[in-house]
Length: 333
Image: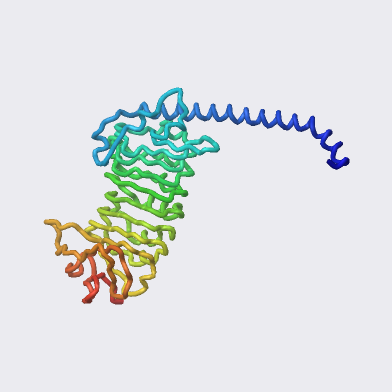
């Protein structure tokens, strides 16, 4: 060892012990904080559990259902409840994911629910339960980092709260049920949800929403499903210009008139369905041009799946161009 280094090492030795003690103290403090955090989160979740009864028929639409909350037990680390639908951040210990889909839940979520103490939540799935015709809580806005929200087929009822549109980090939003989507909510969604990639609102009443709003959705959008939403008016053909949209499903919107562009199919659209079900009250012939294999439009755009009504004489879609390729309604202008 070089002689000049020896005095430096001798001088450093006592200080090394101080650094070690300081690090141990820091680790101890972090450990205590983690224990307190875990106790707080566990208590909040167990309190949330008390809101529900468990009935198998609450999740009848699931291929397999299980009351995941039964895995939530006192005196255990909540982050060990992985079978119970929880995902924790391995560094901070915060709950960042809660998947209670198909969990046989029967009850409702009040605004003062302890669920909303999970402020670091990023993914929340409550699909396929029975929330007993209660309204969607506006307090979901208390999850500012939420990226995925699924409340579909869970027997929520009424107006979708305006606060939902303030969840600006959402990448995926899935709602289905006896719900109403108002103009203000749509305006907020267009303005705030700039990162949205998947938007599924099947069965949600949107009869007051002008279809033109759809063209203002985020350029990040890849999937748009609005089945049976009561959309009315003229289909916004410019929606085909969304640069990342690959799936567009507008089935069963009887009063939506659509015209598709003859050219400029530059989007990555691969799945397109604007079909309607045959109905005794339907004033038009609901024959279909349907296929599950690769289809081509008049200008050569390729689809994986395309399902569009034909022989409708202009009621729903413009007449099809006579072509030996698969039919796609086009705009002659």
